[in-house]
Length: 259
Ligand SMILES: *[C@@H]1O[C@H](CO)[C@@H](O)[C@H](O)[C@H]1NC(C)=O
Ligand SMILES: *[C@@H]1O[C@H](CO)[C@@H](O)[C@H](O)[C@H]1NC(C)=O
Ligand SMILES: *[C@@H]1O[C@H](CO)[C@@H](O)[C@H](O)[C@H]1NC(C)=O
Ligand SMILES: *[C@@H]1O[C@H](CO)[C@@H](O)[C@H](O)[C@H]1NC(C)=O
Image (cartoon, rainbow, N blue to C red; front, side):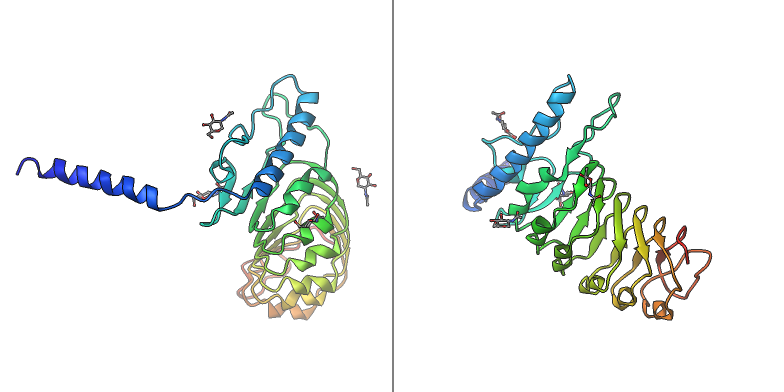
């Protein structure tokens, strides 16, 4: 009787060993691994040319291991890369803080990872225009966060091909131009954050047809003109600005614009 727990433990460990053998552990596709290593080597060489400290981020990204086991990377059950969490990856740790200018070209290899569903490149101060052709490739994206970079120019038309997006944050960049009717293609969006840019002109009525929208932040831009009564169509939103307090809207921040 006293042996029962030991016996159980033994059986359990045999079972676990057996299970780990029969469940294959999928490795990420070689071209996805190479794309990630390419991104890392560009970043490392830019960083090391500027700072005396060795680049320490992405240490786990090495060519001998499965990229699904790397930090900041998640894969599907079949081993394709679905998530990259690259927030602040190019930002030097204190006490440096001074940012090396990094062109948005650095993102090029990532556009070959078509299985991506979540991509966070916030807080990297990447500069230049948003690479439209590249992002247009990532049609599986559900979540795209580009907050706090130095992207300039207007929103490239290819971005509107990402019709599965639920979450889009392009806040705190230097983006300009009008917000066009193309916004209507983001049918599934629940969050749209564009604050702290240089967008101008009126808010297109098509924005108010995005029925799933729950969070909208257009503040700190140069948007202007009368606010369309269509705004009342956004039943899932809650407007929280002092000027426009309308029924069930969750968060709509359009302060510091020129209405
Ligand atoms: C690569 O990473 C794995 C685990 O992440 C580690 O065991 C291995 O030693 C690393 N290889 C090299 C060459 O650094
Ligand atoms: C990956 O998945 C784990 C477990 O679900 C989660 O905690 C983590 O935030 C995900 N993202 C990254 C980039 O590791
Ligand atoms: C889009 O993906 C295809 C296939 O992976 C690739 O050949 C092409 O270069 C990608 N386009 C861009 C702009 O990255
Ligand atoms: C964006 O910034 C880059 C420099 O980072 C500059 O060469 C380019 O002309 C700018 N583009 C626009 C549309 O302002």
